[in-house]
Length: 254
Image (cartoon, rainbow, N blue to C red; front, top):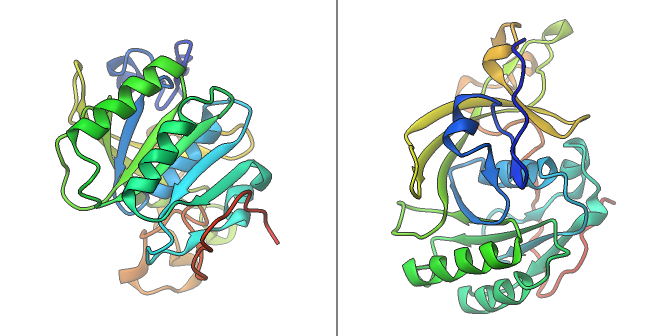
């Protein structure tokens, strides 16, 4: 395994190599970052844990979405404490953005996640405000989007998808892996691709190409159909099927 380059202060290390170098030493914590794709939820949770910041992870969700609410046991499987996850069912886009503006003033937050989906209200002006507030307060802000990419002032834009897990003993799938594409970066290079494996014990990413074991699609060891393989990385993006209530605070595992 190749030596990893530590992230610069105030940044989250991803691959410890060329992508981190292109980002100026890692993903900046004092900024707003957009995430698209089927594993956006998983990536947001991993980034919040990898930031090594203490304090709550405040998640602003839309209770009308089809995905249900976050699953506390899934966060525990990633190495996090479900008691840190504060889930707020903010309702429509405008109440969600007002809540985000208030949250960005609280430097005690480890991370703010805004589940904006395809809301048209989240336009260039809104993302500029989110970025300026994140830079001023230092609150790590992740904006989860859906649909085609829109004009944005966020520092970076990522596409996140599941990648095949490596093979463990007995053909069991290994830790979750994500395939990420850096599609846009303000003032820096983009169009970069990387595959990362999540280390739950140390709560950090490992570049998949430094781990020599062969890979198998997630779920292949359990006889799932080929069409189902690789859709989600283990339990990272799993959600409870019950819709969120109108107001949620801390979501704890049962």
